[in-house]
Length: 200
Image 1 (spheres, rainbow, N blue to C red):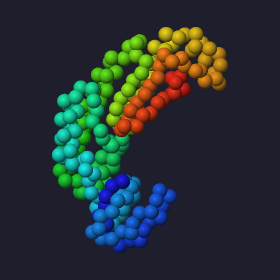
Image 2: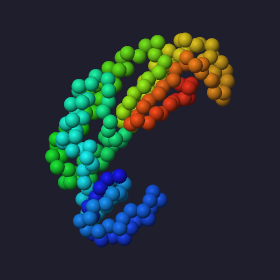
Image 3: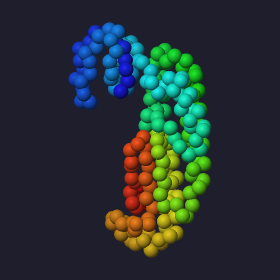
Image 4: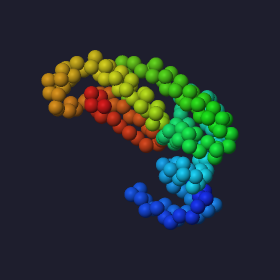
C-alpha cells in the first residue's frame, strides 16, 4: 500500500482486492501500488514516497549494511521492484530522485556482495541455510545455487537414497533427519523448502 493525493473527486472503487476511496482532491488516501501507478499514469494523483525510500532512511540502511558483514537490514520484500515502478512512473514525485536511486543501487550491491561471500562458506558439512530479511530478487538469485549445492552434497552422502528415488520417480523420498533442509527467513517469515531438494 502507498499513499496518494488525488486531484479529482471520484466515488469509491469496489475491487476484488478491496474497496478504495472515496477520492477527494488534496486528501491523502492509501491504495495498492498498482492502483496508484494506474491513477498516476492518467494524471489523477500524485504519489507520496514510502518512508523507507527517504534519503535519510536509505542512508541509515546503507551504513548498517556496510557495518554488518552477515546481517541484512529489513526492507520491503519487493523493495527493488517497488523502487523501479516509482522511478519509472512517479519520478516527478520523488525528491532527490538521483540520490535515492544511487542509494538503492548501493544497498543492492552491498547485499549481493554479502550473499556471494556467504555462499563461499557452503561445504559438504552444510545441511541448512538460514537467511533473514532477503528480498524477492535476492531469494531468486541464491535459491538455485544453494539448492543445487546441497543436493550434490546429499547425493555424495546418501547415494542409495538417490538411486531409490530415481527408480521410483513418482514417489517422494522422505529425507532422514540429518538430510539437507533449506530454511529461509525472509522479512521475518519462515519459508521451508522441500525436504528432498530434487523437488525444489
